[in-house]
Image 1 (cartoon, rainbow, N blue to C red):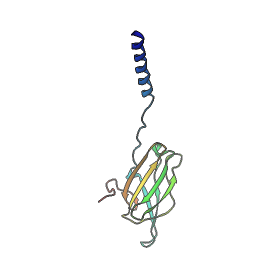
Image 2 (cartoon, rainbow, N blue to C red):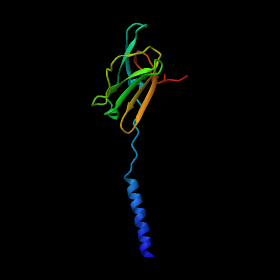
Image 3 (cartoon, one colour):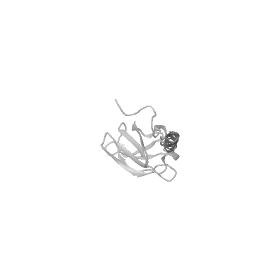
Image 4 (spheres, one colour):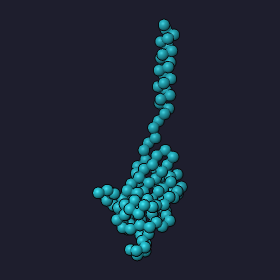
Length: 129
């Protein structure tokens, strides 16, 4: 009887110790619109933009997707070694387009959708109705 009790205690300890080794990943924050800079070039009939994001340790090793939901296309680039982005390749876009900026790491992806404007983006003008 005592050996059964010791075996159960041992199994319980083994289960508790193995569960403590599995730690969930800490979520990274979504990109901050106020730190996003879009530079628009060209006239209204032929406007394009490039994207810049300052260094951020949360985004080191990320793949960056900038997707214009209004136009239905985007670009994909790697973040720089310091977690910054850009200036990216030019992408066709207009003021007011809904643009999704995503940072994808091996363990998670975070995104923010904004209504495009020249320069720094608004932290209150998100996509949607």
